[in-house]
Every structure is written in structure tokens, then in C-alpha cells.
Amino acid sequence: MRPLSMTISQQGFRDRMYGPKERDEFRILMLGDSHTIGASVESEDSIPKQLERLLQMRLPDARIPVINGGIMAAGPIQELGMLREHGLALEPDLVILELYPSNDMGDSLGLVGKRMRAFHAGWQQSLHN
Image (tube, rainbow, N blue to C red; front, side, top):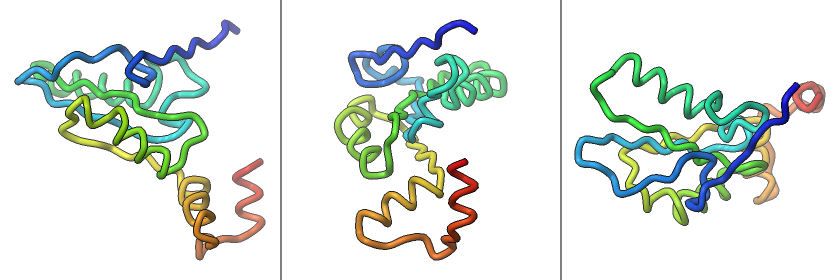
């Protein structure tokens, strides 16, 4: 098995550098955690790049880059920080927030001393396993 490469651009994304948005471009910024950034796959196999390829196949004349704004071990609060600090500067036309309920929602609720209503210790343990 070859080693996985994980390069982060100067703009803070596991993606290429983006210049000013072109007039005919529709930019999508995808935020999320290790699932979004593609922690266990090459960059071109990450969820944002798979979406970008699907859009290119269906709309070959359109310019629709999907920017990988995923962050390792992040939750919604960190993703909001990514949007504010790095994402909005790229002028996205659409922002997609990819959530994984067992940790994203659970982590966010934990910050205010709560937990998911559907919480069940056995279910939670099976997710972690």
C-alpha cells in the first residue's frame, strides 16, 4: 500500500489554490470533518472532488468547482470558523455542510451539557467500534 498524501494549500484547504472567482463560475464550498476532507483517501477521491466530477459529467459546459473545506476532527463550530476565516473569501455561491450526526451533533450538544435525544449507549458504542 502506498502512503497517503495530505497537502493543505496556503488558503487552508486540501485543494488547489483558487484565484478570484470568474463571472461564469458557480463555486461550491463543502465543509465538514474527516469524512469531507478525505482523511483515508487521496484528494481526488474525497467527497467534494467526487461531487465535482459528477457535476462535470452532467453539466459539461458549466464551471462548477467544489472546494474541499473539510477539517480533521472538526465539528460544526470549527466548520463555522473555516467558513468565516477562509471560505467566504472565495465567494462561494453554495455552501454544503456535511454532518455525521453521532459525533458532529453529539459534540455540539456536549458543549452545552446536552446529548442527542435518541442516545443509546449500545448504539453509540457500535458506532465507535
